[in-house]
Image (cartoon, rainbow, N blue to C red; front, top):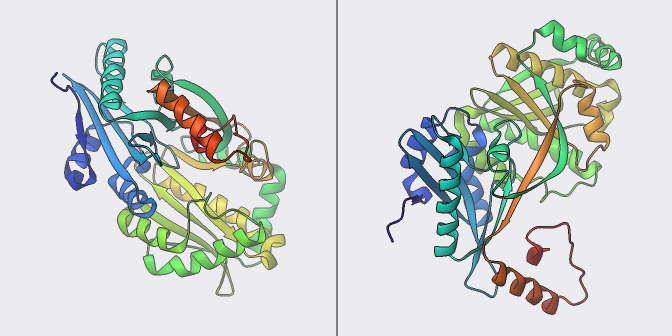
Length: 348
């Protein structure tokens, strides 16, 4: 049977870029720069699935992972935001149905057992795929609405935040932006200090210095550091990734001895105003580690009305093999309980 879809590896990165540029509603996390960094660092296989019909197009990058002790695979999207990107000009419902059938054919042909999608919260792929994958809410995040004016944005700040920003300015803190890779050392020393202070899990935050260097080398013009300094000392920082529509405050930190003077509040404020001037539509501040935790509440003080829902899509493409893999997992690790909230269950 003739295949009606196309599959590309990153060896065809120019083709990836051609299709990516045809999509209107997109983001930095779908670029070959980020995808290739993850592929190299995690030793997995990046795949681009293309389905098109007349003026309609689906651009779906994901990672194909080997399943241990089997000749089967599963797929997952980027650690950050992912899922299919759609360009739909006509007959949308019928086109999405045909895409879903074509993708199921691919999964059957390539021995794909399960699929995990971490949906982008502002691109609405989850809405389009609601009838084709199981979707659940996993966390809440905060964004800054950059379609407001600067005064409207500042008025949304919690009063205490406005006071702390002004206090940081009075205390002599200054702001510096950089897109130079050599400033990674300044960034990482503060970030590492913060992660150790908070007893955070480095692997969860996908970042160590080697990965960051690889990522930023690939991104080139789509990243920026912001630093807050006092008397020449780097005290607070954040890494931002961006495209035309979205900017993402990805990770950062503040030195403990300066924390009480709130340079991190000034940093967030300066970041917001900078990307407002650059005409992005949203600055995504991200989630907490867990729903409603202190990190989330800190971010919410900048925009109490800027909450978004993070959603995950799950689909089992081969139920028989999925069940067999879950049973193998039970046999191989009898003393380790299955985490029933984890997908796919055989990787819990």
